[in-house]
Every structure is written in C-alpha cells, then in structure tokens.
Length: 479
Ligand code: FAD
Ligand code: 2HG
Ligand code: ZN
Image 1 (cartoon, protein in one colour):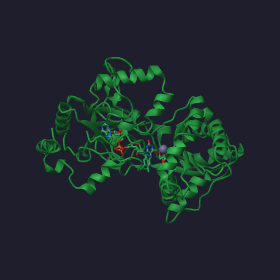
Image 2: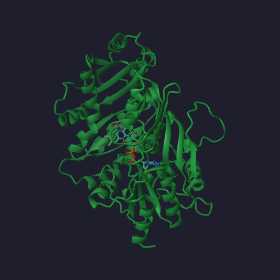
Image 3: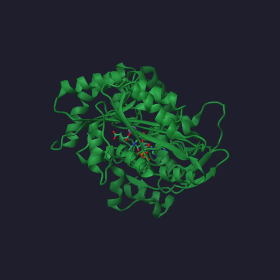
Image 4: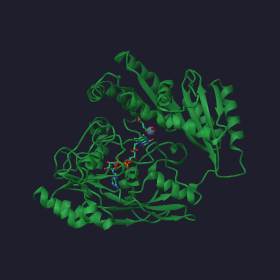
C-alpha cells in the first residue's frame, strides 16, 4: 500500500483534523524530549475517541504498520519516538483530553488518557481533593504517558508511583479489542489485574485511552523546610527520623547538591537566596488536610531533633506561600538549568534507602578516576532512594557525541555500582529505546523471559511500539 493510500485511509477514518499535515507541527512529535533522536513516522494521527483509536489499530494491524502511542512527549528514554523505518505511525492522544467525572465520595477521577496532568490536578482540586502525582513536566505530560512510564515525581514518598494511583483503565489492544474497566474500586480480586500490565509498558502492549485515578484529601496546611545538610550526613537516617517524627505526613524529601542548586538559580529571573550546606540541601515538606494540626510546629520540632543529631547545619521554614513556591521552583528548575548549560548525561538510578550514602561515595570515586574535570549535577527524590546522578555536558562539547561517549563507559560503571547495591538503572524514567541494552545487561533472565511472554500474549506481531522496552518471542522461543 502506498503512502498516499495510507494517508487517504487515515483521513477517511479520522477526518482531516485527525491527521497532522504541517511539517513544522510534525517536527514537534518526531524528536524525543532530550533531542537525542529523530524518527521518521509514516503519519502523525490524532484520534478524538476510543472508537477511532480502535479503528486506527485495526487498520494498522491489517497493513502491518507499527504504532507509537504518544502523550506529551516529555519522557526521557525515547519511548515516544518512532524509529527511522518510516513504517510506524505516531498516535497522539492530545485530542482526547476530557475530564470524564470527579467522584468526591469515591475519591476518584475518571479521565481521557490524553488529559494533561496539571488539568487533572486542577479538576481534583476544584472538588477539594488532591491528585497526588506531581512532576516538573506536569504542564505538558499526559495521563496515558504517566501510566506508560509509571511516572514517579515529587510526592512518591507519601503517595506512591502512578501504579499506586490507578483504580481503572480503558485501553485498546493490538487487534483493536477495547478493554473497558473504568471502575472506581479499591478492592477487586477477580483474576489478573490487567490494568497494571499497562503501567510502565511504554506503549508496547496497547494504547491506554482512559483511566480512573485515586484521589486523596487536599492538604490545606503545609510546612516546607529548606535543610542545609552537614558534610557526610547519613541521608537515610535523617529521612527515617523526619518520617517517623512527622507521623507519616512527609510528602516530599528532595535532595540537591550545591551545583544543581546553582544551575537552577542561574536559570531563574528572581531566585531566592537559598544555598546548600557542606553536604547539600534537602527540601522537605509535610502536609495535612486537617485544620486541627499545626504542621509548622511539628516541622520545627522535627528539625530541632535533626540539628541536635548534628545532621543539619541549619534549616528554615517557608514563611509564606510565595517563599514555598520559590523553594520549589529551585528544585523544579534544575532540569532546565542543566539544559541551558548544554544538557546532561542522565543517570536515573535508585538503590535501597540504606545504600544511598554508599552509592554516593562509590560513584564519586568512579567519576573522579574517570575524569577529574567532569562536573556533576546530583539531586533527586532521595525519599524514594532515587538519585538523578547527572554528568554535565561541558559547554564546548558536542552534546550527542559526549553523551554517547559517557553512556558507553562511565555510565556503565555507575549502573554496575547501583546494581551491586541492589539498585536499578532506571528508577522512574523507563526503558524506552535508549535503555533497552541496559535491560538486557542488568535484567534477570527469568524476568525478561516473563516480560517477553506478556508482550507476546498482548502483541504477538509486534505492532505496538516495536523497538521499545522488550520484543515478543518468535516461535515461542527466547530468541
Ligand atoms: P510520552 O513521552 O508521550 O510517552 C512516554 C511513554 O509512554 C512512551 O513509551 C509512549 O509510547 C507511552 N505512552 C504515551 N501515551 C500512551 C498511551 N495513551 N497509552 C500507552 N502508552 C502511552 N518523570 C518522572 O517519573 N518523575 C519526574 O519527576 C519527572 N520530572 C520531569 C521533569 C521534566 C522537566 C521533564 C521534561 C520530564 C520529567 N519526567 C519525570 C519525565 C516525563 O515527564 C514522564 O516520564 C511522563 O510520565 C511522560 O509523560 P508523557 O505524556 O510526556 O509521555
Ligand atoms: C526530576 O526529578 C526529573 O526533576 C528530571 O525526573 C530528572 O532531568 C533529570 O535528570
Ligand atoms: Zn525525577
């Protein structure tokens, strides 16, 4: 079938609003967020309904055309970018962005998968509830992409990952079958939990078209503290203390080194005057939905104990909403700060909480013995054992070349260290196209075999996002 005939068939299915024509617009869908790779799609399609998604999938399957689902295209591992074969279409969910229902008593929200995360948060907040998923890209990432990557972010320490927030799902399988399980149930032990298969599947099992998400009471009181850490502070012990003494009200525990803070403040127009201690800084927040709790008083008591232990040099609390926002802006501007300085080679590692200190020590030695001139930006969701251990691209270096060189040498040493400590090479950003070789290097044989069996069961012909994450079995062998 020629390109023109495909084009006509897609237009017949979707109408002209469902096919992106303008080459300038197409260019925004075909390159990954980190601008490391540009694919060559056969078409970029924007269905408006679940039925249209199913029609596209049936047509594509019939003609053996591959499908790459796309949300906000903010992910870091190239999973939303088609390959260069010209045999894959991008299916963008951006026109499917409705909030279907907020149910305050069930504490749930039902949405189209193309809904922008921030809009879902806002819809929940207008009903006095919290969607407890928050990340720097929330203004552009979409719920289907959050499910596809099992996004983590800034409040996992209290509420868990996207996986923990999912009540129900609607999805189109690789033959056009629609799985419709948009229930708001907290308990439903009726066989395999199919919705969880799609979480972290990065578009390889089907296209998520709708989701029911769990909401929490909206915090009305927050205490946000900036902790200047003493040198060599045992981060896991400090976390344990703050967590225990704040009665599980801890919603964020974000670590930042001085270099990461400087990158962020350099990129801000009106940065607050915050800085790190000799051991870096932590942004800690406790929050309560109850009016009866004085969270600042609680935070002050917790911090006094931490200062007594000698773990923090100093700490101060945000005295107003604008101070709180400014502190958070510093944390959330770090990725942009890295980008402005010519980018970074990203290492989204996690280790058990008890091994964070050890990872930092070992990794530092590895980096220094690799090249003493390398500069790092290290920060992350330390409350979840997750560090963004990023190597800054020197301002005068070719970013893509430098990234390739580091990823084939130092990165593997860092990932080896994380693995030796029981950790992983991808805590929250996924595998996509860029980290497939790492899954093969570090994945347990049995686990990869199980993943390939699941892939084969859902998508034997490898229509769905071929080239990302995992491939199906051929002739029921592991070849
Ligand atoms: P996309 O990039 O469009 O897609 C991601 C994957 O999901 C792809 O494999 C795609 O094929 C698949 N997919 C998309 N939609 C669907 C669908 N409807 N059905 C099936 N599969 C689908 N991530 C974190 O986890 N924590 C963070 O703190 C965080 N902070 C970030 C900060 C910045 C500034 C940026 C740029 C990114 C950050 N990210 C973070 C990464 C990114 O925002 C998340 O991975 C996000 O979940 C991706 O959503 P998306 O809609 O952009 O997905
Ligand atoms: C964050 O935590 C994101 O801000 C981005 O996960 C991490 O850019 C990065 O390395
Ligand atoms: Zn992160």
